[in-house]
Picture (cartoon, rainbow, N blue to C red):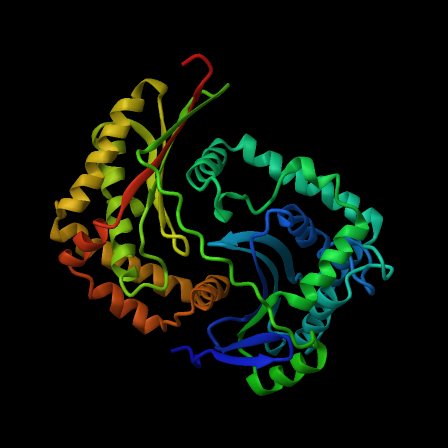
Length: 426
């Protein structure tokens, strides 16, 4: 049986360290989360910064140098990314490295990893006034390719458009990658100035998961990471949802062979709400699994969709339905999806659906602990919401959900926007 201690949360100078000591893994995972509320004027800049941070440091000035270092560290993994969780745009710096306990030559990989990550965060390649021009140009190309790739992936594109329309006028409407047309306007000086602001003011959480000695790791982290005291005012202003008098229906046309029908629902229940357990079970029965109502009734029985699923945006309070259909089936598909939601609200749910969903969610939670990055993600969701839940509490909460709980949370769900991407002239 693997030994695992409860996560230790340690406030340090300018950041919070989270240590999870476990012998479940033969690797050590480092994850740095840098949080700021979504700012329309800085979204693209922040997306570019996440790219530039991985492109060079003072000691490793290019991707080639970094690649060689990682190869020498037994093929360590290193990525940076930017994403959105609720009203926040978050830069993630992640590294996975073999645990030196299992190596024959006892290479000090943990210490090397911390030194490298400290440099990525505190000494990215710059001349004191700007980032390296060559690295910035290269990463601009990469960011534009990423933004363009959304257009090429029609499921992602439809979801982006749904969110833009559903949350128009709200912070959440803005995509984490920003705007393609803004990328080339950002200079290496602008970006470095923004980086300095980020490193001085953003809220930073540093997670380390693995078979580590927590006390030794704490000393090592303290000696290498000194970010300076800060008062991060990153709490976004409360935004009242833009209430619509009637459902918003949007049609777009493109040269596509398959229609993308996406529907957005709002709910008042978010991750921090005690009823969140019931909302998770609700979503699982509605469209979260292969036994869900959407999958069985829209895809299997009616053969209307190539896929039909739902997922939750936990920090905003939204449920998104995503389906791929033939253009001619739009009306039928909307009708059947509405019918499935009506069934959820009226409690037309079998005991088998309820119990199978709870068991599937239980397995998902247990599987998340088998993967260090999924575990960090779960812990960080809790941090963002301000509500800490242990794995045991998660499982107990899910398993305690009743049919009445499902009906109660279903009553909070309202359809906001229907988005349909169809073929030209269809």
